[in-house]
Image (tube, rainbow, N blue to C red; front, side, top):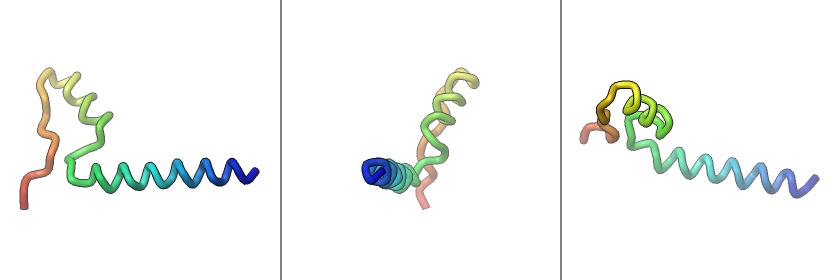
Length: 50
């Protein structure tokens, strides 16, 4: 049971880190790929500079 808690904590920490690093982008990676595939051109990835 303890291993399950450690695994869940590690997954949550990895998700938190990924979300923190990805926050400067317009949308998530899967949505960006989906828009690229459906619109037939590459959408902008980063947010405009402030």
